[in-house]
Image 1 (cartoon, rainbow, N blue to C red):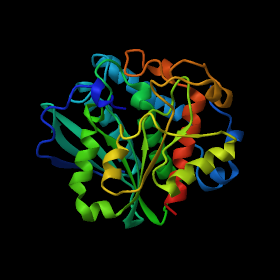
Image 2: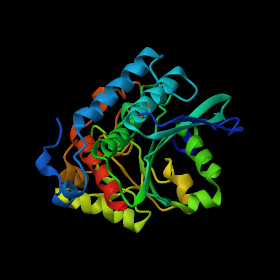
Image 3: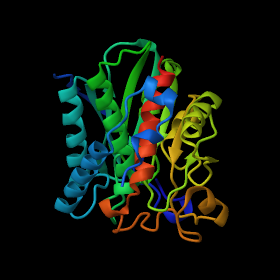
Image 4: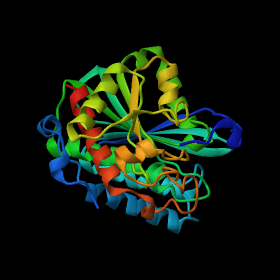
Length: 319
C-alpha cells in the first residue's frame, strides 16, 4: 500500500507511452471447519500452504535482488516472471503491460481465464511491487500470493462461470497507483463498462490483524461480510487505506469496487483486540514499509481466512 501523499516522494515522469506484450496461454492456519457452509459449497478451499509457498518464493526473490521487489528493480521483474509462469502453465492468457514511471520501466500482469461473458468481467487484483526498503511480504506479497492461488484454483477446478474472470498484478503502486491507473486509462470507456466489479487485496496477512471490508459497492461489500459472518468473525469498515490502493483508479472511473485489508500503521484498539485478539496499542503491521516485512511478518490465520474469502467472492460474483 502506498504511503499518504505527505509521506512519500511524488512520482516523477508519470506514465509514458505503453506497449502490450502478450505472453499467450500455454498449457498456524485456521482450521477447515472455520469455513462457512455456503462458501464451501460454492468455492474451493484455498490451501494456505500453497499461498505461503508463493510468499517464500517472493522472499527468496527479494533476498537475491538487494532485499526488495520495487518498481524498476530486478526483484520486481523476477516476481512478475514467477507469477506469469504459474499462470501460463495453468492455461491463462497472460498479457504484460509496459509503462514508464520515475524514469524506470514498470509492468502490469493481466491474466484472463478462457470463457464467460466478455461483457461482464469480474476482476481481482493486487500490487506486486514492494517499497525499496524491504521485501514487501505482507505489503503486498500477501495479496499477490492469495490472488495467484485463487487463479490457480480456478484452473484446477475447471471453473466456468457465467461471467468472465480476470486477475491482475500491478506495478508501481508504491509510487502512487501508477500501474493500475495506467491500466484503467488504457481500457477506455467501453472497456471499463465491461467490468462488473474489481476486487482489491492489499495487505491481508498483517501480524496483528484486523478484518476490514471496503464499503464501496454494496453487493461486493455484502459478499465479503456474509463470508466472514459465516465464520463468526466480526468485520469493520476499512478506512486506513481508503483511496491509497489500486481500487481507487477503478472507483474514480465508475467501476464497482470492493476488497479486504488487515491493517497497516494504525494501532489496534481495546475493542478491536476484544473482537479479534492480538495486542492492544500496537500497529496492525509494525513492519509496514520496513526491512522486517519478511515471511516472519505474516499471521497465518488472517492470511488463510482472507485467501478463502477471495475465492468465495470470485465464485459468488461471477455466477
